[in-house]
Amino acid sequence: MRTKSEKTSIVLNVYKSIETKNSPFDTIIYIFDNGEKFLVEDPRMGKTVLTNMYEIQKLLHLTEVKTNWLRTFDGQYIKVEGNTVFHFLPLFYEQVRKPILTFNLLNRNVPKFRTVEKYINGKTIRCLDNEINETSNKTKETTYNYLFQNLKPFKTNNFELEIIEDISNLIYYEDGITMLPRIKITCSVPIFQPHAILYQNLRNSETYGEKYGYTCNLLVMKINDTFYRFPYGNIYQDDRMCFGNNSNCVLEEPPSIAEVCYSHIITSEFNGDFDPMINFNNSVQISLDIDYIREKISQDDFSISFIDVLLYLSSCEDPRDINLNLFLQSPNIPEF
Image (cartoon, rainbow, N blue to C red; front, side, top):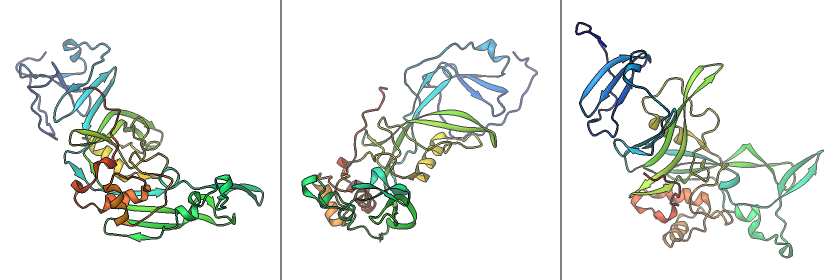
């Protein structure tokens, strides 16, 4: 391919050194940033060839590829299906981190209360239904007044609950005039070592041109060799992560899609569009009494609100103090 007199200077930016001699692959191809040159490595023989997009066809001929999950490095796996490479990998290597997450409490992450439709000023609106009528199952325990009785602005070192009056959730008080406020919680809660199945995809934007994105087909947490569902929301029933349209796109290809994915997770807003994948009860009164909450959880009694679950998790300075039965094991881990 090249004569002995030919010399080519190359510069490699090494993000992480990996020993490749025990690779499960017969051939490893490194693609340069400009997409014009390649390094083709035979890890078993310890030989590498520098080539380009035309001459590489003399070395390799690719057909439709489909593989099972193959173990690579540092606990990672990959699977190839056609032109798509799926990665199963940890998003960080520590056992746990405690990022600050933001929750706008609405829909599926607050106690479920009764509402009634009213026709006021020419339009139909949803209003609170605090009527009590035992014969028609309109009990006190299903009213907003009872379920949210203990709700108030509340703050600890790792947890803050705010009542935001200027942001409506489109539900009105009984008068049909005043809208219910939003509940916002900002708290530091544990994320145990997250593992994800990711694959990269390119998207085109009329404004920005080509953008680099990825799809998260699975997001779980690993604790003591057991995989648990991601507990805080934005997760489908099959443990896929929802980031919202285009929220996981960047303008430059990142050196690590794991780091970008984790960054998007902790900067996402958890707004109640999805059920939190954790043990809680959406039909009980909010407590905000940490002693009461700890007592119930210590007895594996999870008849507490999601707000109380967040307060509990934020109060555990040592993650080893957390009752792991609070978390749900994932049934969606592939066979490796």
